[in-house]
View 1: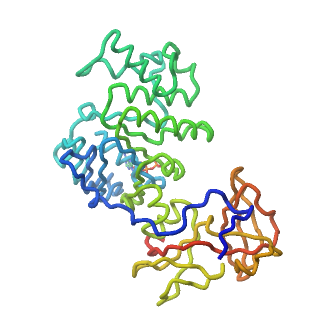
View 2: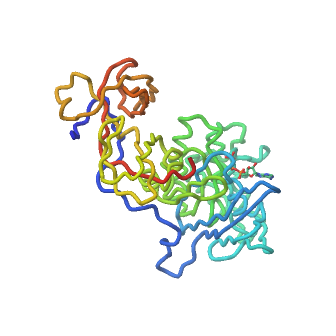
View 3: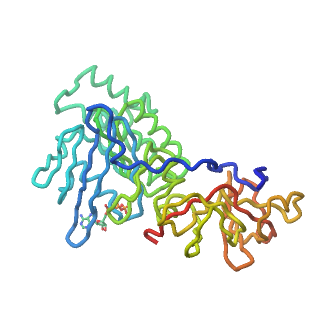
Length: 391
Ligand code: ATP
């Protein structure tokens, strides 16, 4: 099949070619050195009465790593974060931070003894304190407290880290929402905590500010050499910011891997559809071989495990061309009609209707075909199979 990029084709296509390595598991991340994990969560369970919020969660972070815990509302993300911070007691399992056990059944180190900084959804700044005093708040009244010039220097350093140099004298109400979140981050980083927990810190901000802050926060955390966990239900946020993503559902972590691994090699059909858009095609019983005849024409199917029941088609794998395209016969494909166009500026998500009455989604570039246009659609690259899990 042709690999020519048609104007309708999205420029944001994932890599095709060799199948990426399978998602990493906790067991294959054993550090080479004897240095303890920055965070080690082992088989942690937590219920609120009859509600099982965490059902045996295990996750480890190396020093300096940034992990996003991604999952739908109510899956237990905040509970996990609160258990790490010490705001909730766990029922079973254990949590160690920097090699020190902070939570075991019967042992519960209080939050102020865990050296964990939390950046909440909305900054929760002290309204009566200046920006500098908010940032400096964590630098007094604790072991290793800084005073006088040292304190001012650290405050200014942290404001610089979050792009607010010189704004120390302002009061919180004189700042925008985004600037307030930057102050909250500076306050969290000021005492140089080994672990920073971010609880949907961008959710109250508008889209453009969110994108800007994401990248600045990522840079600030990297420069501060902090280990960090971000809790979010926003897949774009998780995929763009994190070194690794832990996908959570119903109190369990379903998959941990780099953003590319989780996107290209989802462990099951639920992860495939939750992380990014995907259309699923059920494999016929007893299917064997690397090619499958589908409503989108023939598709190449990657070697799957015996449990693979569905083929995952990402919208960027579906290409469109005009009916009278000179190389139509070369690309093959099936006739289709554009049903809807969801325009996003840099790209568009187009729904096409197919002759058998089904639909498929297509990621195009910034100039999608208009609704009602007759097109030829085909699938390029190799599609993975996944078990039905969770559907
Ligand atoms: P969201 O994205 O909406 O914040 P979440 O993934 O963070 O959701 P949690 O807040 O951890 O989810 O909640 C997990 C489950 O535990 C939910 O069913 C929730 O209703 C329940 N839960 C959380 N805290 C409590 C509590 N203090 N008492 C009772 N139930 C709770």
